[in-house]
Image (cartoon, rainbow, N blue to C red; front, side, top):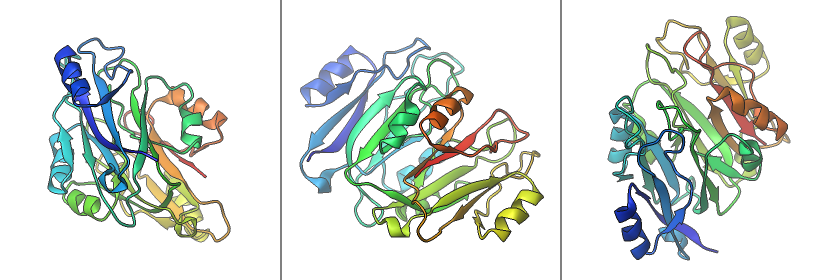
Length: 295
């Protein structure tokens, strides 16, 4: 078995030649597809040593997101994935980390999708999706990075944040940030979901739900669900939205979770048998966001 031991990004032919000379392999999908600008590609290296394997790949699209990653020891790839996409674009950067211990499982494969078609099938086959669209804010095709781990993992913990002050601690405690703001819109805080993984299915959560009103909150509480304490629409002036979780003995464990921002992706995920919760996390705000998970 081999593992992904390094990743990098090319912005031009000079970068491509340099990375190829260093033993990197290219993923031949343009990360700027559909918006013009630089032809940007993701590159990777493989190795046989699991101790050298990358266990985390995260994205940042503002300085505050980047701060916690840097403090937690993540390595930034200093190549803007929105390079040349227009004057309105905001920089997007990739970060990676080599961790060990209970919540770190080596990544054995990496890929890129440039459309929503077949995303659902990929998710069911055990691929883990970086939720941030790499064309975020500039239009064009929907670009996502996907990872395959060396063992099957399960979601064992979830939480949410409405500020960046605890990001470093969350990263150091083994959490993965779902790199898309659930509170998208002109107002309010940046709100992110987080999760931890385990290779032990007995420790896994078995269901996730979303409430957008008090009646649903009471119903979920009566059914034994536990709420994540952060309002996913925090300070937006819109509806209060909460994520709830549950662990039921004998029920199917949750293998993965992600967010869907593109409405066109929902049918593909539903056809693949993915649980797409029919509650907009951005209710009353700017555009739909849906939580989905695979069992």
